[in-house]
Length: 419
Image (cartoon, rainbow, N blue to C red; front, side, top):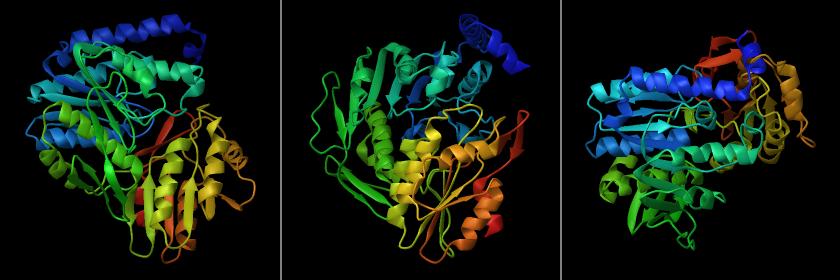
């Protein structure tokens, strides 16, 4: 019924409805963002990790903080898992969260901001002190009606900056110029490119140099200061640089940030190693082609044997274009490909799997609809020195199936049970 109403209601009316809800939420909870420093993080990939890292830096610098991401909600050290199956909470929920942060004495709130959330005005009536851009690759294209509309939706976070706001932009992304165009009192850039010149409009640049990526940690230098992080992959160094740029803009020393980031041993559902007992099993949230490729590149370096992948794609008419692309990437990097169910919603899981397989031309594919059975099969065929990489859900606690139902699920828990 709800979906039917959405389909027959004009977009302008829906937009007005969402805007009004956002306003009412802010009024009901007393415009709580006015009493906090708000940092918003947007982009296609790396948002949750960057929120996590920024929050860690601020906490270790002595500030009371709150954070909201697809992983969990934190308020002055208290942690609540995000079981909404929604990265960015709805209008009333997000203002309620910010009110709770104010009441807990928090000084900062770090929020993961999505294009879908912006489309529904969930960012409205929140004054942002800092906006962070991680990267941009195609996602939610069908929902937004094209990549340019998707990019513009992300840009609306930067339009929501306060007059004295700061923007933090990934200079390595081809779309960085677009996000640097928005007015901000301070503009910061960060980069992994050794020869990168400062972009016009980006004042200070945080540059990662002498990068090394090992099997269990990564290291880099900033201004001759060595950072060691227990996060894998070049993309996680980029996420760390984003957080360091925020910390630097807030006046936190490199030494304090080095200690803060060095204490992090991993991030739930993000290249999370579940076991290394018999062979290595990794769970990751990657659900876009760009994220999947970066995760496979990193997992490949960790493997002295075969790379075995379990993957799927979300349903509900979401970004069907990417399904064969996911198949192509799987064929490029995996030695053994297992395609399974992910979050089918009201779509036929076998149809989704078939569309992924269309991208695979020259390798054998194992199609197993039942996700537990698929994971069990991957573990059964894995041998010493192999890496099993299970993608698409990360630390999500639910699987969304037909009839608007959510069934309890956790890839990590399933792996441990099946091991």
